[in-house]
Image: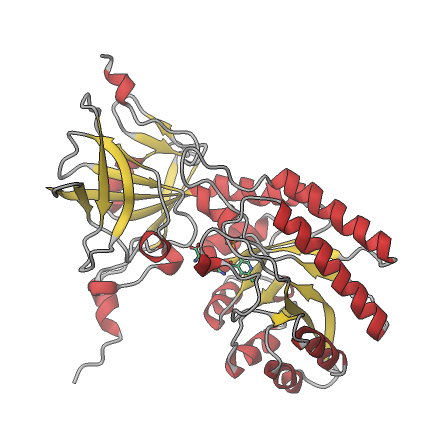
Length: 439
Ligand SMILES: Cc1ncc(COP(=O)(O)O)c(C=O)c1O
Ligand SMILES: N[C@@H](CCCC[NH3+])C(=O)O
């Protein structure tokens, strides 16, 4: 058998710039992943900058005359903020920390939307002081509080987050569009209408529009079409009751990506065309001016551009499964243990003529649920020292990483045009101990 037959099989969900090399290595954006392992060690997150940028542009092309606000929670660092800014996107932040990082890079505050179901008084003050473009009202209590923070003579633009009562999203824990969960204000029990009235009665606040967010990892267009229609109808209701046609409609993010070979992400072109047509038609039908759309993709911008690299430490045969244990785990790869999320993996760095074997890739943490990929297929001769790559880890990996078991968080290495550079350095044990003030 030709050894080249055993080179890793790539294609989606791997980033388009990821290619197999004849010696069993693979490259991302022209950079050898084994070279990254040699230079930066493992575990390491690698992010293809051009792929992030290409995705930003695809959003702008699919949704002209709209505001695309990258959801920073998916992954944020200074470099990322600067990439999305230079591609013409705004930023959705949901904490004082994300806001501070964005502002530290000189991100224009007017292009920031600030979220949170329980923003602290300090976060609200920081958002107002910075002059963020929009603050999304997510509970009744914050309305008076926010209004009191706005200096006389200024008006703070706000959106009211409404529960559209649409269930969508890959896992129960990441569905946010249905009733009876902590995000948004219910239309059914009148809280949303109450929030709208209270905001309109505050001189320091300017109600720019409504917001909704259905959930995350949604790959069908239909829930968004329904949300668009529902939300335009809510805008019409506000016009009918208060005589104001609000100019903006924020439909949130949640756009799904492929994590496995047989998965498809949200079809962005169809999403853009359908949502725009739905908003235009429904607005025309209700005699409303067409609101400006705001969209907040996170995962779909950074997720597919990322690859995680691990070193295999041990192989263990159980009675039913073979475990491949690596030098990272739930601290840098939390979604499998949190949601049961599934991932594509491949061995890189050498060619193998051994057949495929179903294995479970696990981490090195003191938890039996510390799994990276439950149902991986790797060469049967996988052994300690081999390197594993995991696909589509550019979103909700670094940003959700922890230091559990006092492990150090991996670095983020950006690759572009054959060059690699560290954009977030590896955490070290001094970092871990710095906050511990001792006896
Ligand atoms: C309000 C809001 N906007 C945008 C996002 C981004 O979601 P995603 O990364 O799934 O696109 C989230 C997270 O789900 C969110 O809560
Ligand atoms: N952290 C989640 C998404 C949460 C989205 C934020 N509202 C995930 O990894 O899928």
